[in-house]
Image (cartoon, rainbow, N blue to C red; front, side):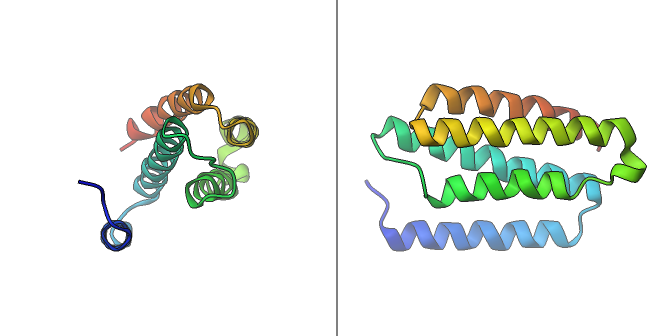
Length: 129
């Protein structure tokens, strides 16, 4: 059974409320891992959309993924983070370029590769919990 637009909206609202509730009590590392969770979801949705034959440029998941990458980079404390923060800036910049490229090309395999890279970095953050 296909989901109706109202069901999709309701599910999205529930997920946002659940995320906001989690964020209210989260420490900085947990907040970053929540962003990675949302980034993984957005990229996964984009890949599924491509596989269903949809064009993904200028879609909400594409904008969301890009905004999360920008937010992750903007949230880095370069003074306290030193070389690690600088390296993460390069990683996030590379991920944004890759995202822009694969979204423009409607490239599901490229999105899968990007998702694997995100999961690798996400895994390192999760070990800090």
